[in-house]
Image 1 (cartoon, rainbow, N blue to C red):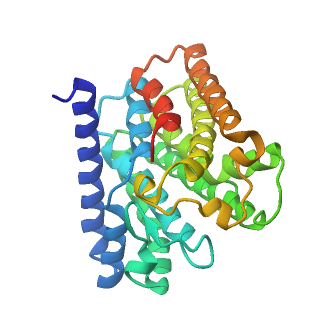
Image 2: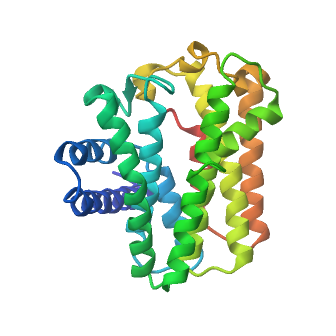
Image 3: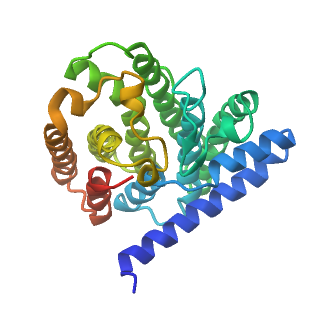
Length: 298
């Protein structure tokens, strides 16, 4: 029998998935049918929903009592868009994502590129409406959108992706590698907990503490990804294993060894949890998500 925690997690995932489906229905009505179909394919497939869970539990940890699933869904839209573009032939040129063909393989490159772009305003609109539904005034809701878009832009996720592409075939030092991944992976994970806290009207100190937690967990998550790329199979990952080596990317296992990379990830998780403790934020769910970020098998 599933534990209470497992049942709660399943319920939360169902709520996020339902919110994503509603968002697809609402925005798909104004998209070309083939684009709407591609967006739905990308958003409603399998996925960890880690960023969505972080939104929900940061919101709860800061006293929120409303339904934050639509806000979590908006963050997941940003993440899904990034995966669509990350997989394109001009980027990492991958064939499998979440256990099935990548969007440009299932449809085509033009459709995938356009669908990814369409998800950006979809996420912004969804985040604004979700924040308003949780009781934020227009300025507060706009601030939530600003944090989300800034994290996904040139100073965050997109900037990190550019650094990652430009580093292929070059050996990076640890500081350079962490700069890449604090943007490419960490920025959106950090934004997830920040917007959850903001939606609950947390004070600045709590938002910043959660931001430090998110930044640490985001980098630890990427280190775990690098380790899995060399230790797990394609079937386990749901995406092509060994891509980092094929693309001649600098990775944490290459720099630190597998054991050293795992130790660095564990240290980052400890830093993140210490930031919560120092701010008096008690959340077993956030602690469990931190551990999951480095203990997962896919």
